[in-house]
Length: 477
Ligand code: NAP
Image (cartoon, rainbow, N blue to C red):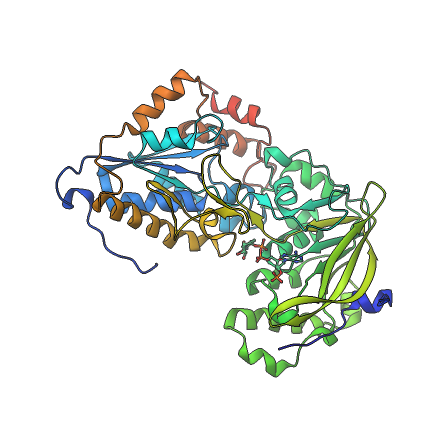
């Protein structure tokens, strides 16, 4: 399909100046001689990390010891710092990870940064297998001029800010302007648009951090433009998440009928996307007077790619170029328009952080790997393996696959005989270096302190400062 429609943003500026294929592998003890205990280090305690630990337990039972490292003193990665604070039911999956964490053969080793406190080479010397489950915590860059202007953020920073990530707690975005542009048409863009739209009352029951709630309470944003470089048939938004946009107290979705392709064209879409497009059609059918009752407009601008950001120190406008689809790709038409705006959040995907000594695929923004294998005994899983796509549940089969690879590599001799020191060796190294390790038991103390500090109706008030987390973890010691 190759259609070109003019989004309202162009019209308005008049601006056109132009369970995986599971292989059953026997527990180690059934695999022949010399099957002494094996040691696995998992780097990253998010969904990919815990599903991998769970799979290791299933495959190897008591014949394995798993250490899950995290640079944070708190576990669960994306669940704590990425999943939207008003999506508590999704965050509930951490209870499953806790079951794994509390078993004898798995332990959490928090507050240890791999590549700084201990190198990958050292870990490879200590453990039979090292699995990188570090996710994709860095923003992909837009690569346009003006990206460095104030009040322009990538979603990792912005989401980290409202989710209390210590690195972004001081972000202090300026929400005093009227117009926010959210770049991207995926679920993260939806999260950001929704968080910017909600009333304080709508955050009841969420664990949005106090500093963000206070600033959102004072927010003057009343126009949120979701900018998509392709069309309605190419959105990456899933129906449940898109549907939430139609149920907000003070914000209404604005979709221009003229932007939507002919309805019969929806027949070729896969069912999930078809549902999302049907929702866009429902949004487009909302009568203008009903929409006008809500003071915040969330506008969908299709076929518009960002080409520059303008401003004197702080962003004042975004320059966009109309696009058309050519063999599924967005191609600029040369028609440009400038939209005044006060805040820009770019939600265009993430990159994995490189680790010294680990081959990295710069173009793809993840570890260079062959279906999860990086080097003998070094593997990756989840977003660090496949890039930032899929749901939390996608990481479960991923974890099983990587553990099957570990088992195969043990069986084929790639990993050599057992006899690595594992956690005992790491503990010696940590004692030598005086690393301040946070255990799962310590984390439970942090968790209890956060629950005690919760405002009424909220599950917790997160610490947003690493020192405070560590202090809480040492309470009563
Ligand atoms: P995503 O689904 O890949 O969406 C990224 C969006 O950014 C796409 O619309 C993409 O457009 C656009 N984009 C990429 N590069 C661009 C550029 N240079 N200029 C303009 N637009 C650009 O990524 P995401 O929203 O970050 O989500 C990541 C993953 O987390 C997804 O699997 C998502 O479903 C999941 N997630 C799920 C939930 C949930 O279930 N509640 C919540 C949040 C995230 P093109 O399609 O044209 O490339």
